[in-house]
Amino acid sequence: MASLEPMNILVLCTGNSARSILLEQILNHDSGGRLRAYSAGSTPSGRVHPQSLILLAELGYPTDGMSSQSWDVYGAVDAPVMDMVITVCDSANAETCPIWPRTGDTPPLQVHWGIPDPAAPPEAEWAAAFKSAYETLSRKAAALIALPFETMGRTELKTALVKIADV
Image (cartoon, rainbow, N blue to C red; front, side):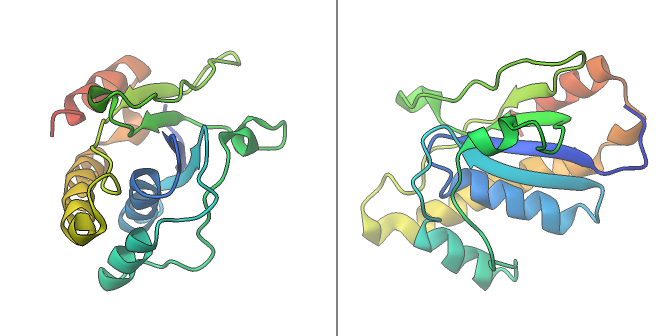
C-alpha cells in the first residue's frame, strides 16, 4: 500500500452525527496529513449531534463545515477512492451497521470498531458518554496513526486493524 498520498478513510455509522464524526475529526487532526478521513451514514440524521460539536470544540478540534451526510456521496463516480472503511456502530446493542459494497479491482480494507452510541443515554449523561466514546476512538486512532501503514501490505495492515478493534 506504499504511497505518498494520504490514505483515504471512510468512517461509517448509521446516523453520522456522533461516533463517525468524532473519528473523522480525530484522524484528520492527529495524523499529520498521513490520513484523509471522511464520514457518512447509511441513514444520516441530517445534523451533527450538538454534543459532538461541544466536545470537539472543547478539545481544540475544528468544527466548521461539519455535516451529517449519506454514504451515497462516497459511492458516486467522482468521489474520492477509499483505501479503508471503518464502521463504528455498536452491533452488540442491536444497531444495524452499514456494509460498504466491495467494488473495483482493489476494494477498500474494511474493519469494524464498535462503539456504544453516546447519544443513547438520557441528555444529562451525554457529556460523559461522548467523552468516553471520544477517548476510545482516540486510542484506536492513535494506534492506527502509529502504524507504518504506508509501507504495509494489505494483509498485514488488515491484521493490525483488526487488533486495533480491541484497543
